[in-house]
Image 1 (cartoon, rainbow, N blue to C red):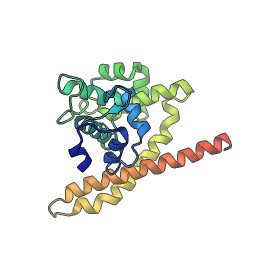
Image 2: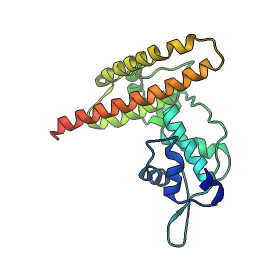
Image 3: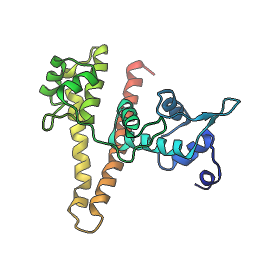
Length: 218
């Protein structure tokens, strides 16, 4: 934090050093990818080197937190950044929850009514008070992309079942914390749930990568 306070501009390596303590998985490639997607716009020196400001770092923190803790897709995060305040470098104070009507979900996920009905019939997407949240949007978008590879909602019931089992493990781990009545118990349970969820996601990704290598014979 000392370097951040002293210097008005930071290199991409310095930004990475600031963020890695809070976001161990962030890399220079990830920061460049977010720039390419238009979520951040660092200045450039005359020789072409990126120059990051304090606001750029806070913007990155918001993006990475939204991905890690709320699993928001980048398009939703970008919309929230754009809607918060006028100007390309605006930083939202508090992200509004995603609440989509059926028609809005169909348009945002680029799926048809038949596909959405099938998603609901297999329990992959559910509405609350006739509104769909960011999880429903991400599921719908992912299923739409998987359809190009011949994978449809009926093939994904195993994925849903695995997610439910993992959620059960998480519930088992945090249940003792939720039963405590000490001050800060709820916050502790929420923090633990996020950490466990992140670890389960990493484990799932590693196991899936191993399965891919086996399929490819590598």
